[in-house]
Length: 107
Image (tube, rainbow, N blue to C red; front, side):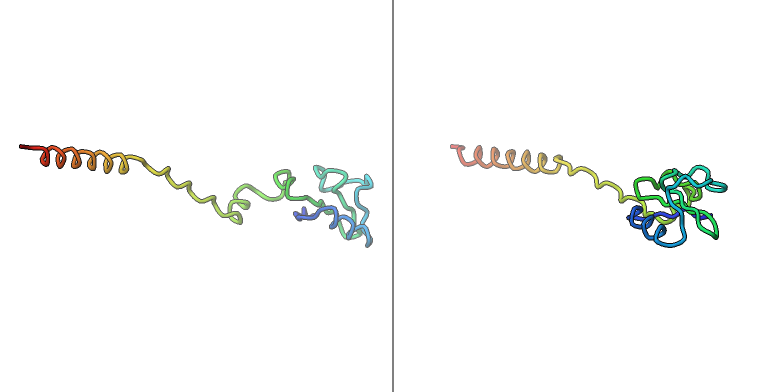
């Protein structure tokens, strides 16, 4: 029996209730025993468990490997900009300035 993941679980439950589904009524859970009772639906053809995005990690039928296959990896964090080149350029500029000033002040 399927577990369903949706951005709008309450709407999905209402749509199922509008048909022949019995949702959130405490119906006996024969297959989806770990489904929260308020997310469980019993239909003439079987059972369904409706999960919202925050509950996705509670799903039992999707493995971590399957989640990784559909969720792109986060981009690597760019390295922090270094101040070393700026400091070297500043030091070189000061050194050149001192040398030029010394050379201009010579007798």
